[in-house]
Image (cartoon, rainbow, N blue to C red; front, side):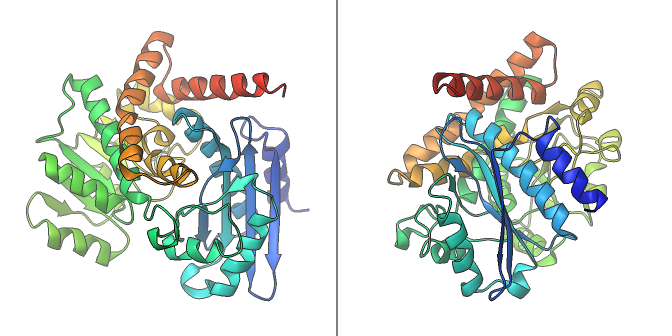
Length: 364
């Protein structure tokens, strides 16, 4: 067994970041499928979380990401008030090269074999059309198209929830929830980020964007010839003078020992999962006077949407639930101040309390 694998197993069985109930390694040689399904907790109900399709450098890295993402979903679902635990799946490989109907059907069979302990949805590299295919083999699939009984694109309400988190951050820090004339930097203007830019511009915020894909940047600039400008990369974005809010909306680990010391923004509030690269970053942010809106709280709009799909989807009902992210975020800031801890730690305490109470009530 390699040293990296030992590290993954240590995370699973021995670290505070572990404690997962079940991890399933899936392989279908005929289609080329290699996947990991991680179930962190079912204390609140069936685990719910998306499927990430990504070209990981190693299988061990894929397992580690699945573990981290699944754990984050437990906390996200708890803070969103959902009757779901946390789970996540990753499919290993470049979706532009290996994604096929046969692969997605094989993946659906693996999810179905768990008998409803895990409910899947879209994530990075997977889309509504993919979930329609997966659903042909697995009824525990959300994020499907409206034509197939689903809720469609969950990034719409994910962005709306992040926007509410920004408004709550502005209320807490500046005494006014309005983002008019604030300058917001958005790193990643893909599925979620481009919807977030729409909300920001509608309110009159100035927006600075960056993305590794030039076409994504061009789409935003063509739509908003005024009030939006682009910079070459994330490092330039976080150093932009006059930035009020920084919104990481791409992959995780955006807040680390290199980025935090040079951040010019006073608020971090974005859609990316697992933004804190390692424990202790939340304290570094607090020490610099930067208000951090916990990622799994503010980006919960999408999971609120897909969870509703299981009960007969109603967009306005979901939008009303996602709007409560404003109040939830304010409550976390208040708890953090009361307990003298960073907001990320306050959110964890609230989520852990709900999961503990649910497990206790079920005799677990």
